[in-house]
Image (cartoon, rainbow, N blue to C red; front, side, top):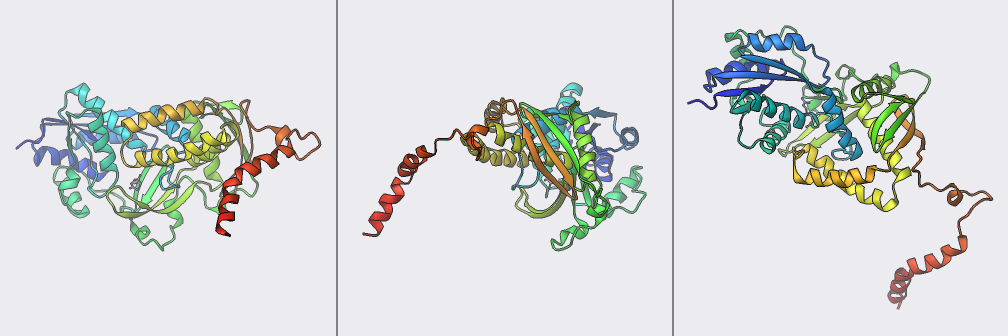
Length: 400
Ligand code: ARG
């Protein structure tokens, strides 16, 4: 029985997604597989990947540059929201999934496919993000996930692929499972599965070990317009260029690493190492500029929503009414968030050492301890009397 006629498969060039091509056709009766490799700045050579899909049996091998959309439509909203999952992970992998889902759906519609497919297993978050994202964008498309069902071990997968001319990986495969894109790298498995094992230096690629960082601090000024990063050291840069320059600048100083135990959507705890230098420094700087330009109540109210926003990205609800409603609120708050943040990079730290904005609501004449202080100190007394009144009444009652 055929599960689908024509399928668009999310393709990375790795063994698993390559094996999906013959598997879909041989085992699930799919007539035609079109592969789609999304360039999200992962730094892989896409020419060989394109050919590899054709060699593995794809009828059409698409390679699409999604980098600009990735930064402007996915990373920038997340930066405006200061989105961090469980207070730490800046969602560098999670943000790529709704974009890939969108690219798959668009290709399926363009080529008249009745299904889309991906190579995710049943244990991870990415299957949730793909499946829910695809369903939100086109609920009529079937979703096929061979690796969720085939039950083959790594060796069996390689052997299956060899039967259909898919070469087994040449170099001894790394013990790690790595996902990478312009926003960062996520590394898990191998020795990292023991939460007590310190990650070996070999897992990192975007950030330097402290021992190899410069012995002099470096200052960088990040300019924001309405919550969106637009310049580095006064020079306006295109979004993709800005992220890559900032990755290099901050990664060189060893900033941007995380080591955490996180709670996956499917209920499993996993140990993940991340490096996301540009994204982390941008959220750090953006939040600081907000503290200069937003009122206390807006800032505090937004904090709660930021947590919700990070959660919904992690849990695959990028295309959802909640996300749209939160964006409306966040965009309103960002109208004031224009200015410059000065960051000092040194030995694994990115310290905010200055900020300025034409929309600053920091009032020097109220804040100063100097002679030109305009604050009415006497007014504080009446304020405190009323502010503390409930506490005073409560205390009197308790003491009888
Ligand atoms: N745990 C992260 C997330 O769910 C990253 C997962 C990516 N995969 C990997 N092989 N490390 O967003």
